[in-house]
Length: 159
Image (cartoon, rainbow, N blue to C red):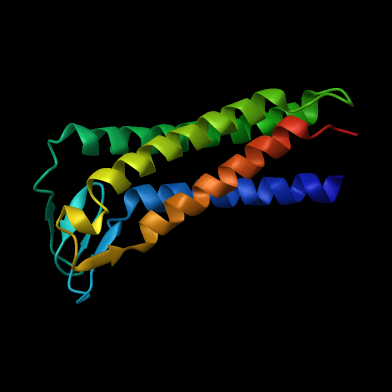
């Protein structure tokens, strides 16, 4: 049981780190020529020149930014709750609160990544000469990890 708890903790920490990286890094879409990338915050034409996005005032982008920040907040809160419950909970109780908080994080990632995919990451939206960057892929990996962790917390019992 201790190995399971430790491995869940490590995956949770990795998810938090990947969420930070995917939200902060400006590599959601990369040009096929490799000359530039687009993120949630900036448009980088080279490794040193980054400027504001042309569509930075759009509500869809603001929603993606908000949901990605909320997902980080809920993921960190879930981790803190898990550690708190680990040391204060009686044997046989579920990690219900940490699981529910992690599933809220999962929902925030789902909404944010889905909005970005629909509005900005589709080749039919004028991005035909680009492909998904590592931030976009990390976001969907965090989506999977947060769902698995949330479900594990809900069914996990301290023995």
